Image (cartoon, rainbow, N blue to C red; front, side, top):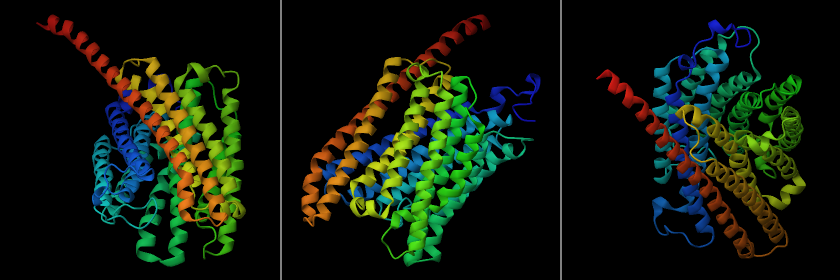
Length: 471
């Protein structure tokens, strides 16, 4: 029986399906690691403008903090937030709880240990030499086992659904399988089984598949769940939703080599990556059309409904990200922007401008439901959005321009120092954009704390008369 066919009497109560405390814990852990990641980003930002506050301390050197920055955002913030969202969405769509709540709590604590141990290992100099796969080798087996348990815990209720299932669950099933395989491919194959150019090819696949087969399907899956609920209407076209899913499944795994153009990797693989990357932009266009078709007639919701504003801003950024990607992977364009800050701006736009924006939108929607209390301040919610969206837009635009100037400097055969000097104003602007984003998250944290305090006071007030009656 699916959620479509279940009779009201047969539908379990929300408390029987969703462990709200665990969802809240995952969100709080995600926000904690988001602040850790931003701290690492600031240390790198100050280093670039020659104001490293921790100069001369090897354990806190910029190269190590840069890896903490990326790993904390991927495995600390994004993964924790997605796990919290899965614990909310999957039971509600399948009308069944996860396989084991005890296992869910065990995974929560173990995963925080994995992320913290990864950070400590990186700071101690034990990182692997693989981009996005710097996790120390002694952490990899634990993380891999954890991903397997996550897949088992959530697949158990999904496989018991009889009849058609929601597109959201299609994306979640794919993500649970792909993430387990992608992590194994990136962290074990180059380390133990292949080397040289072959290891580079596998590393390229891992870099992009971590985004395309872990973050992307979970992100779009949750959009297919939350957007119809908040707008009170179904997705505009079920057919386009299928095009988006199967287009992602077919083209995204083929893109990874575009990170290694002009290398000894066979050219047919490089050409294939270029073509598949451009094809993904066409697939993404169908998904964007589908969601904006859903918004049609409800455009005012963008201004009045905060989560919807987060979601659709992220969708616009996603379209721009993929358009940017389809340009930068061409061999001609790569001659200009290879190794420049264009790529850094692109990475920030997709990881914060898209997926983090979506997750923060979900938290904006769910925290009042988890705490049973309206937000303390709508104005702080507005500041959170505008500082976050404005900050990432300025940062991505700034780094994109910086990359162009750097590329022109190198193509003009100027000294490397020249490219560093012309980058200084852009790096200062990026630092201020980062401060705006940080300010937005501080507004969110303070608003959340005040909302929790109000909820606690309200519960205490309700408990006091009950205690008097008991006496």
